[in-house]
Image (tube, rainbow, N blue to C red):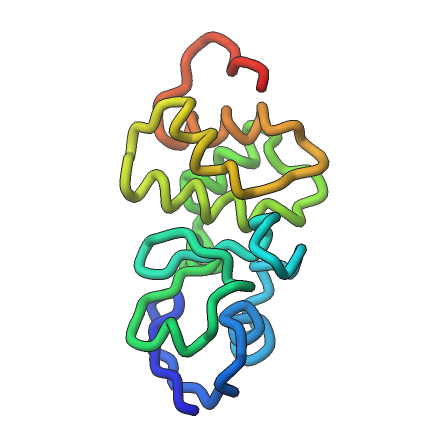
Length: 160
């Protein structure tokens, strides 16, 4: 079946199987491998992308559900090669360890910042609740999102 949608600002027309997941179409047909297959059940957030600026687990979305919509992957955060403020904050705050969860974390945080540019710490925690990280312990991730939002305080992020 034909799928017409926009990915990272570029209009796309693809032939996809009716049961194809958005994650597979992005990775296999478009070569956008930032979103990762983690659990395949929507539990880990490694596959998070934005659909019309809302964070979704692309492993749970059928590709045809993106018909006529706008999809943003982590690759779309730096289309000209210049890092997004959120990406830069993740680097500066040491919020990246192995990097497997990072694209999903970035996309969940980006969705939050698009709808609420100055989130509270609790709002950040809630936005990232669906993203699992086994390396960082989340403190630096919280600091990075706060820094990108301009809401970082001189004090420490409270421990979870």
